[in-house]
Structure formats: C-alpha cells, structure tokens
Amino acid sequence: MISIIIPTLNAESTLGATLTALIPAVVEGLVREVIIVDGGSTDRTLVVADASGATVVKSPAGRGQQMSTGAAAARGPWFLFLHGDTVLEAGWERDVATFIERIETGRRPVAAAAFQFSLDDTGVMPRLVEKGVALRCWLLRLPYGDQGLLISQALYNQVGGFQPMPLMEDVAIIRRLGRARVATLRSRAITSAQRYRRDGYLNRAARNVTCLMLYLLRMPLRLIVRLYG
Image (cartoon, rainbow, N blue to C red; front, top):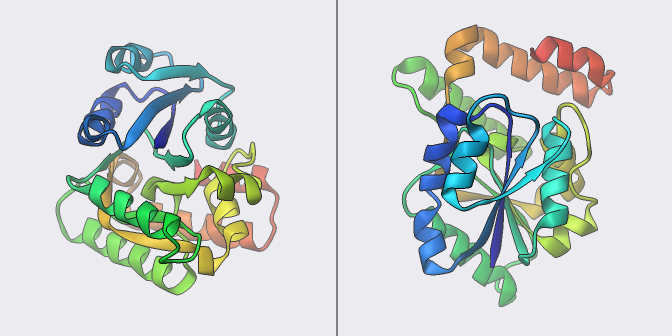
C-alpha cells in the first residue's frame, strides 16, 4: 500500500536504524516497497541500502530532486517520505494505517500527515527544541521534512509534488497543501541530533528559524542555503 521514499547522501551511520524501524510494517504488508534515492554517496550508504533489499535509485543531489525522483519511481497509492537519519518509533505503522483507513472510508477529509518531532539526545536543550517544533506545528501547521510526510499519490500529484529546490522543499509542499490538509500523527519521528550538537542547539535553532523567515519573505534561495550551512 505504501511506498517509502528515502533520499540519502552519505547516510551510512544512520540509514540502518531508519530501515530497521520499517520492518514490522513490511511484515504486515502495509509497506509495499522501500526506495532509496541516493544523491552520490561516497561512503557505504549504497552497501547498507542493497543489503536491506530496498530499491536503489540514483539522482542528482538535493532532497527536493531526490524525493521527486523517488516519487516518479514509486508504485504505491500512498507515499511516505523519510530522511535517512530519522527513526520512526515502535507502533508507527498502526497510526499510519488508521490515518489511511479513515481517509479512504471517507471518515475524515483528504489530508497529508507528519509525525511528532523528537531528537535522539538527552538533556534540557533537545526537549526545548522539541517543544518549539510542536508549537510551530500547532500554530502554523508547518512540519519539516525530518518529521516525515505521509501523502496519497493522488494528493501529491494534485499539489505538484516536491520541487527540485536546494532547500525548503518541505516547506514549499506543505504550504501548497494548506493548513486544512496537514495533520500530525501521535507517533514520533526520532531524528539525529548530530547537526544540533555540532553547531550548538541555540545557534542551530536560531538558524533554522531565520532561514524559514527569509524563505517566507521570498529571499533568494542561494542566500538561504549559504546561511543554513
């Protein structure tokens, strides 16, 4: 039923955990295929992908382009886009199956969905970042790509899919969906905190907010990419 699409670029250290979390849904038959769209990895990402039995597709680097390429190759009526450093918590497949069933039986309006955001780190700062993300999603209905995106193929095509953008491809598709067509699932998407630890939590969070504001103000993407790092 679901085609899972994962863009990768040198994700050797995290991809295995991302794929392992998908096994229960594969066994249950909820997941029809897993497509790894690689943007030119120079580490052992492709070895990990091949060993998992996933379909590997190559693409120019850039998450927008990679996810667009993966969607074009996917065969399922539903797509689930995940980052290669995100691990879905146990039981996620039940939330997804319920969401899909309610839409397909007409018990809720057509919509896409993202997971709750979580970081794989301990301490006060990771929890504060998580609360900030939860507030953003509550106020703006604006999940980022590291929260995953569950969307039917029909709705994906209707809104024009992911665009080949160097950054903000996740924000762009959510804005085209609109607030009324974006839901948040109860399960968490647990994302690597490596970038936060490397850059500093406050610095990384401030940079993310600044990039979003500049994008909403229609600043050139090349400037936002430079700031994002």
